[in-house]
Image (cartoon, rainbow, N blue to C red; front, side, top):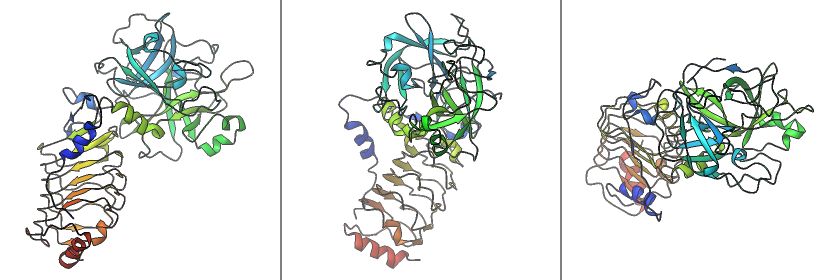
Length: 466
């Protein structure tokens, strides 16, 4: 076991050195205490929030008309040639919009739309208004359709696309990104999603769109239930979900690409992207049957990879006198790879704090007042590589703490008050190459350096056994 200090920069260099071009490395600096309320924050921290919306009311068939600015993450896609609306989308950052793949490349359409063939309108409310106050027009720089979208098959698997916008959009009350739903978030027993769009209403033909957006609640069902409909079974996959409305309500043509949104801890997340619905013999949308949505959580890694071309996500709160952190503080920041909460006054960290950050690779908590770690703190952080928690008040390490962290390479926990260390702590850490436990109650400052893992464990058993 090699005992070294400060090899943190290695991870940073590794992330940016394997790319031939210079990447834009974005360091998101924010004080977490400022975003706990879920309300808009003015100033430099405002752009790092997501999911903010006015209070929602109760598209579509039997949908309710929404209020202006109620859903600030809605995006309108219009053709450049004739200005006609053809799909919806969801703003997920200052420079990215999620939509359905079939909006940009329909089934049997050999080539997708090019960025020059359409524009995006943000803050849009009335489709008939050519110039609408508060609305802005932005231009796509490039589009990325998921590589598994198959235009030659009937199935609607991987019906998802990401649009990169030219520049960064200005954020305000009627233009704000939605958070991205992840598998770490929990759904209720009878989950419902809010679907919003400009699709045809019950008194219109399916080729017509309404001018004002409507919203409706759709009940999400399991894929097992959806597969009971034989025809639906030929359209869905493990990466879709089905939903259905009540009293003859549901999405229709024109709602494609829009989202199914769910609320968690006062923030709105995009759970699904409207993909397809069935039609009646008369050519109307069959709202008595299920509608198909792309499950956004199944594409988190793909979205992160595509967005990481521009950004690597770092959360840093250094010497901000931060006393508390909790799960809701990281809600909507699932692409974070590095979290630095050093030299603060943190005493306790709830077990589920990092559950919504599945890509976490480096965590630095040094210089706080933490006395212990819950055994499930890192259970949903399988990619953790480096962990720094030196200069705290920790007395005991449970052997189950790192049981899911098979990629962990470095642990720095010197200058604590460790009295007991369960030797099983190191059993799953086959990639561990650096550790520092010196200057603790059971380990002196002269803790020997060794490359022999068995000798290392023997020292722990002898000096720090329970």
